[in-house]
Image (tube, rainbow, N blue to C red; front, side, top):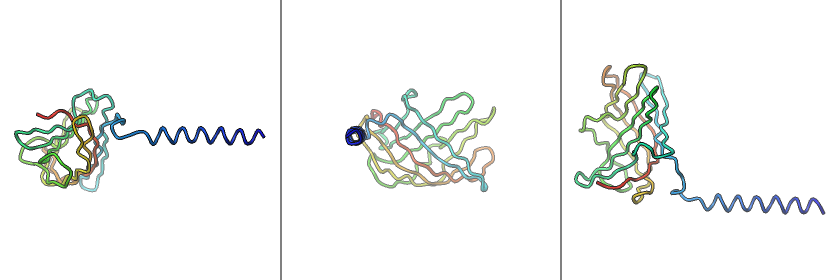
Length: 168
């Protein structure tokens, strides 16, 4: 008799957990992130910028006068500043070429006292989700840039999930 009560109890807990997990939707997730890898001369570095508190005002912003969406996230840890910015045309899902004529670095990384900037050259961004304001903009990217001081070619690949901020 005790075994049957234990099985019923465990089954009830399992069903409660299953129900709670299935009721979570994308807008409940509070983490926004950009995760990427850079490859320079067979040396790979992996980075993940996470903003759980949306404290820096970064995310995905659509600029209507230019018909451009900018994605941006920065880790302001003073020991290792890492900033990522990428722009693409429009405000919908699809595959787009990187906008590269802005002279804005794709990535800035502080290493010691120096800040290394990676300038985008050519690449594709695949937008898999483009939500309304307050919802998610998600996708992946792959392309090539160059390091501004050494002029080394750098392959960059990654993914992101950001909150869409108000349009400008």
